[in-house]
Every structure is written in C-alpha cells, then in structure tokens.
Amino acid sequence: MPPSDLVHLHLLLNHFPTVGMIVGFAVFFFGVVSGSDDQRRAGLAVLFIIALLSLPAYMTGYAAERALKTMPDVSPEVVGVHQRSALLALMFMEATGVLAWYGLWQRSKGRARFGRLNTAAVLLVGSLTIGLMAAAANVGGEIRHPELHDSTLPAPAAADGLLAPRWLASDFITFYQYSHPWAWKTLETIHFMGLCLLFGVVVVGNMRLLGWMRNAPLEGFHRLLPWGVWGFVANAVTGMLFFIGQTFQYINNPAFHWKMLCILLAGAEVLYLTWDEDLWTLGPGQAPRALVKLMAASQIVLWVGVIFFGRMLPYLGNAF
Amino acid sequence: MELLAWIKNLPFSTAIAASDSIWWGYAWWLFVHAVGMGLTAGIAFIVCLRVLGVGRQIPLSSFRILFRVFWMGFYVNLLSGVILFMTDATGIARVWELYAKLACLGLALGLLSRLRRFIDSDQSDGPIPPRARTLAYASILLWLAVITSGRLIAYAVEAKSAAV
Image (cartoon, rainbow over all chains, first blue to last red; front, top):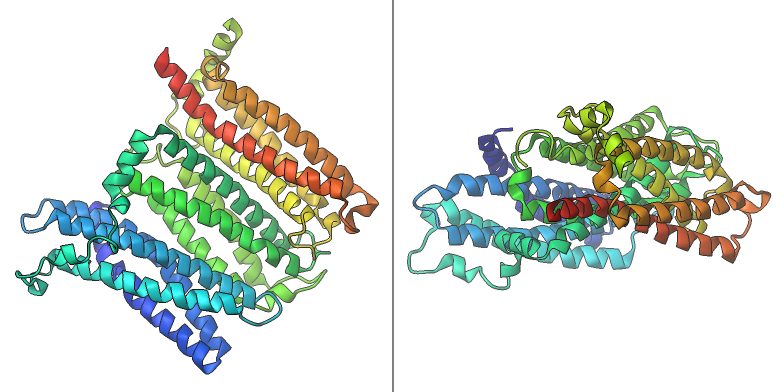
C-alpha cells in the first residue's frame, strides 16, 4: 500500500475511536441503566470492534506524520503531542476492548449473566478512554485546521503533561530500545511466548469445533479462551512496542499490512464466536453448524497467516 | 569444527542461506520453525493448563489426540531446525544458548511423556494427582525456557559473529 493511501486510511479511521467509543459506551451505559442485556451485549461488541479499529487508526498516523513533516505551517511539537496523547488513549482503548470481550465471554459462560466487577470496570475505563480520545482528537485537529487556532492560546501546551506524557513519545521509546540492548530481545521472547499460548488455544479450540475431541463438551474449551486472549494481549503490547520503536520497518511493509489484515479478520471472527452463546452449550457428541466450522478452519488459516507475515517482515518488501 | 564447516558449505546449506525465496529459502524455514514451535509449545501449554484445572469440563482422555499434533509439530521443527542449523553450523554451534535450548527441550519432552503416561492411563478422567500437577508446572517453565533460549540463539550468533 503506498504511503499516500495510508494517510487517507488515517483520515478515514481516525474518527472511529472517538465517535465509536462514545456510541459503544452510550449503548452499554443505557443497557446497564435500563437492565437490557441485549443492549449491553451490543455496547460491548461495539467497544470491541472499536478497539480493533483503533490499532490501524493509530498506526497509520505515522504515515500522516511523515507526510506532514515537510509542510511549512505544521508544528512538529503539536504533532508530537498528538502522537503521545493518541498512544495514551490507545492504551486505554485496548484495555476497554479486552474488558468488553471479557464481559461478552462471561455472559456466554452458560450462566447468562454479566459480572458486576466487569461492568464497573468497563464503565470506569471506558469513560476515561472517552476523555483521553477526545483530548487526542482535539490536538489532532490543531495540526491542520487553521480555523481552530486561537493565536492567543498555546493550544498544544495545554494538552501536554499528564495527557501526553513524554515517555510515550516515539523518539523516547526508540532511544530506550537502542540504549538498552536487552529490551528488544526481551520483547521478542515475550512475543514468542504469547504466540505459543495464543496458537495453542487456537489449534485446540478450533480442532473441537471442527469435530475432533467430540466426547468433550464445548464448555471446557470456552474456559480456555481467556488464555488465548492473554497470549494476544502479550503479543499486542510487545508488537506495538516493536512498531513504535522501528515504525518505518513496519508501516510501509506489505508483510505488515497483510499481518494486520489477518489479525483484524481473526479478531472479527473471535467476536462472532464469543457472541454466539448457544455454541458453547453444545455437549459431548454435538457438532456446531457449518458456518462455525468454516470459521474454525479460517481461524487456523488466519493465525498461521499472522505468523507467516510476521516472520516475513524482514524478507518481503525493502523496509528492513 | 571441520565437520561443521563442511555442513555449512554443503551446496544445500549455501543454497538455502543465500536464497531470497520466501517459499523454500531461509525465511520459509524460519516460518515453518515458528509454526512448529506454536504446535509443540502451544499444545504443551494447553495440556498443562488442563491438568492444572483450566477447562476441567474436558475429559483429560479426549486430549490424547493432541499428542499426535504435538509430535507432528516436533518433527516439523526437527527438520526445520536442522536446516536452519546447516545454514550457519559454525556460528550456531559456538553459542551456549543452543545447548541450553536442547537440554531444556530434552527435559521438557521427558516431563511431557511422563504426563502423557498419566493421560493415557485409565485414571486420567478421575481426580488429578498432585504429582501430575507438579509435572505440569515444571513443563510450563521448561517450555518457556526452550522458547527463551531458542529466541536468544539468533542474537547470540549475531553478537559472536560481530566480535570475531
């Protein structure tokens, strides 16, 4: 994908985290207030989707940053504040996404009810995320919308500090990795451990959906799912640190674009499978419907694809 | 050392090492090794988690089939590991991380086969004995050590080559 397309993608995606977060949170909140379980589930699903879309929204921001750098009326300081505040907001957004998935998972556990602690956590972390997303979007708007500028106010400085901590600056993270040689090795090792845990759950869970281990009820495999999510969280955190540390090895790399596409598609399928509460009540000897089997097979293909494109990062294209 | 140099200079080894192909060159075998790692360590993790009580609704006996997948992953990695070794036999053989990985792998396989004996037995669907739980904890730690030492081989070879 050419860099200019990535800039367009950023302009397309960068409204999703802010607007989608507010919509998802509102649906969930009114579901809690009105006692509507369906509304709560819908709100959690929206929050999960927005957490997924926030990843490319953040990543494509670096292509936009590079394109803007050469323009005379763009302040690098404002761009830097936007990057730091966006990364802080992204961290909270992803935490909200994990909590939202966990809420859906708890619901589909067979007990058909939401956990109180999870509800409280989604409301707390979600409301913080809305504030942080709004702050990041506000600074983002300052970058290239001169009609918003008030020359008497130092706008970027107002959003600096707590909302855009210096230790989240890309340059700081890159410098830290260069000056601490063990950092990259440690991240790689954790990335591989996360891969094994996630892939183990993917293979075993989907084998059952495809017809192996039929004497086991699906309930037991449902209990394994959070371990797969923990593996993914380990890989998302370490993967983001690779990306931020060496952005231009990734952002213009076709292998990375394919890897992200596989992750987003696999993530959408995970949402569908978690959403399907009846699936996890299937007992010994029972088989899921054909669509679920198709998804199970494609899950294995997609995660093998993630590994393939991950390993091919230095070998496809010329970004390394 | 002469043997290692001979292995490294075999036409097969040099062809793989020099190939840019993502379908049969060095990159391909790295990918195959990563999938094999996911199958072996991944399935070992899941079996151990089940022994430790995660997903206790699954009869442990139904996990017997997973050992076939585990061994498939193991042989895939034996093949890909040997090929990767051949591409730089002299470099890889002189880092201690390789021997740490092989030692941890040997121990991990030993523990897993003891765990398998319990899973293959008539008692596997009954209460899990404390000894099996200890084996599961130790297995998880050993597989983590295999992944860590395996991952560090590449960095150690690079550092040694730079120092020479």
